[in-house]
Image (cartoon, rainbow, N blue to C red; front, top):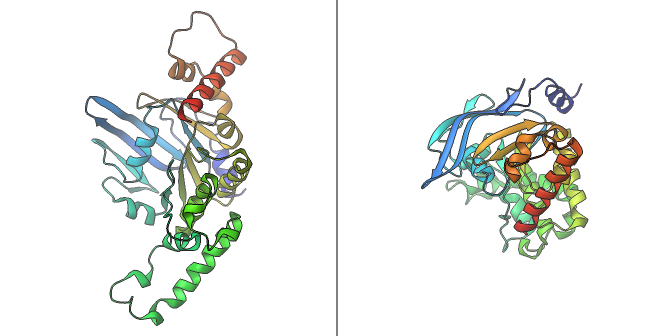
Length: 300
């Protein structure tokens, strides 16, 4: 059995309770909290992300999803909490060191360097470049072979993500979807074990959505772990193996996409616990889809 199917098989007996224990977690976090003034944006008692699977992190606007991403990746500092990646603590570790350990992320608003070409953006994604060091930079013989290898790897990824025709174009000339692809390709330059995608479908036209879906699935199929924030429920249903639901900074439900869609805790998180009549499973799923559509519409 390959690595990705082993990871998915391990989820079979996991309960659908918030903070459920996983058989092979890559990330484990405890008591992670972050407040902004009087607002507690994140208040997660326990979190585990299974290795080798695609996990979706969903919830209403303001649920704390992106703030949790920022905390886990070192872009923000929590008020309390500890978490580990591959068994090694990450609390207080700078964002660039988190990336070097194999945990990289993309952003809802892409962070490409618009005045550099596509290939230059890709080269910047590689770590440990000898040509960037003060003492070796003047001596090309010390770093030229490494740069050639970095360029070769970058070109392979550009072909994989169908951006090779844009190689010499300025990144600022790319469409929103192409920028998402470039950011994902650049993240792979460090050969990460975990890739965290913040709303990969935001601003992407329908023609590129299917391509992006395929690329996300391919990351898992080659043994990587994917954690993504998304409002596009078609994507969540289509590619995620596990779904974690946040509301008001807390994890309120977990489970497979099918079980989460029919979970009353999830319905309440989006619409409020004010239902006066019993709903069938199909009714609940229809309400959930309608709520998701409204949320997606407000973000656009």
